[in-house]
Amino acid sequence: MDKRLLSGDRTSIKRSQVEGIPSGKWGECPVLWRLSSVNWSKCRERYSLIPVLISSGFRPYRGTLVSPTSQSPTVLKSRDSNLPLGKPRSPVLIELAPSILSADFAHLADQVERAAAGGGSVIHVDIMDGHFVPNLTIGPPVVKSLRKATRLPLDCHLMIENPDNYIAGFAEAGADWISVHQEACRHLNRTLHLIKSHDCLAGVVINPGTPVETLSEVLDIVDYVLVMSVNPGFGGQKFIPGALAKMRKLSDLRSARGYSYRIEVDGGIGLDTVGDVVRAGAEILVAGNAVFGSGDPTANASALLDAARSASLQRV
Image 1 (cartoon, rainbow, N blue to C red):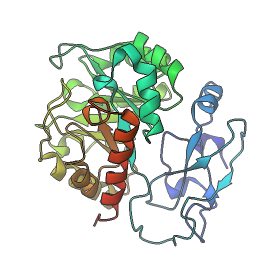
Image 2 (image 1 turned 180 degrees about the vertical axis):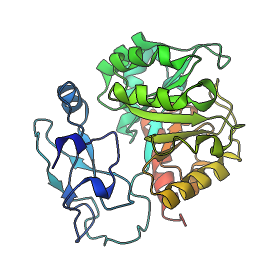
Image 3 (image 1 turned 120 degrees about the vertical axis):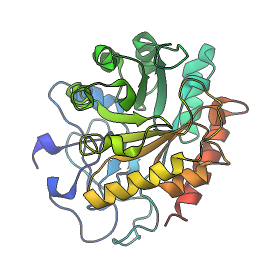
Image 4 (image 1 turned 90 degrees about the horizontal axis):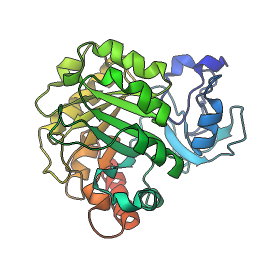
């Protein structure tokens, strides 16, 4: 297999790009991870959870743990290895991305560890500049410190003006995923390719007032689309129901055009809304207040993820 096509914890691959898609059961296929001449050691140390490519049109599945020292494709079986191929009974992968915006920054490393123990598999980092949104949060130094505290992917959501000027800094600090707002980018295509050039997954974000149609020319480029279900800038806001139609539309577009982006949602995600967003097509669930607001982050994360997975069984 061409190593240039190897990918990892942070992406999805089309069937046409790889060989050996199994004809048997789910999960019995090569594990693919990102392998680059400059970044392999970083990836190897950072990712212990890896996806299993299932079949054309299916999403990556985080299966079992693999040795970080193994540098060749491996065959794993999913947790439900008896599930037959064909139309999936449920989404292959629902992930919880705890947002540190609502965490206790005096104990940030501990908060992240506890959220991860509850099933959080991506750490969402909100970057605000006080201009694009009416709040000011953190920059690359905090991301660099957070990188030392967790091996989970860091999903840096840039709610800032002129994002091109800061992408390199966040990538060097340890960001794995970087998303930019459609509304903040004059040359969105160029910005997304800039993110990819720094070996990060590239995401695009749309605010509640921005239609999905504004993304039509970049959906073949992006690794994920983040739908804001609140107006960005502050945590603890009420969910805006109009976001559900956007997620359904993105899911339909992906199927119709054969794209591979994933759908992320951010804003007002809690036990009362998580079922609706999963049924609408969301796969990556950003939750801050619901995880860190009160009580135990481990228990909160676990309860939210359980509710999401239950809702995924009802998806139509």
